[in-house]
Image (cartoon, rainbow, N blue to C red; front, top):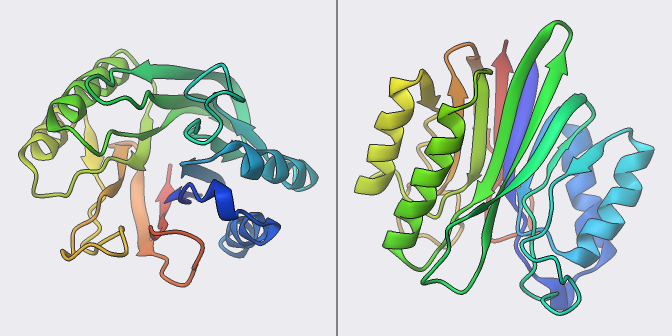
Length: 231
């Protein structure tokens, strides 16, 4: 069984304290998470988190939006994939972002679990422009279509499940054997609608055993999504 979670931890860099890192670690340990995919991870939290993850034998993979971290510190986020599984390969892809001013990225790792190999992707799409989201989804799809491994894709897509461009994306993934794990609740806490914007997709090789929205973690404006898979 593989336990995976996607969680936008909210960029609150100005008010950050070690308690936030501690609560992420508590979540990781409480649910015995094998793969934790985070969004909006900023430098202060990233540094503290990596120190503690090392003690637990977890590694964090993924690069920041910008190379000049100090200059863009406030808005320079990453979408790390955190795991203690054996990682054969990792890469961070840049996604189209204009006319938005915020660069977006997607992280990939290839994991070996016994004699099985699969790819995990984690991303965070634009929140301002539909045209940008559409271009980003097109790039994500293009990357995934070239991958011959079974796939897990997660992230904050900033798209509700009734949006046309999201439904088109879901249909394109179905054509290559990747299904959307339906969460029929809001994942952004202040949303007026009971529709998720944080999503998990898995290849047909994975069987969904359990899915759950975790609602008792107060450190973010999002709820984490937890999914257990048989592979």
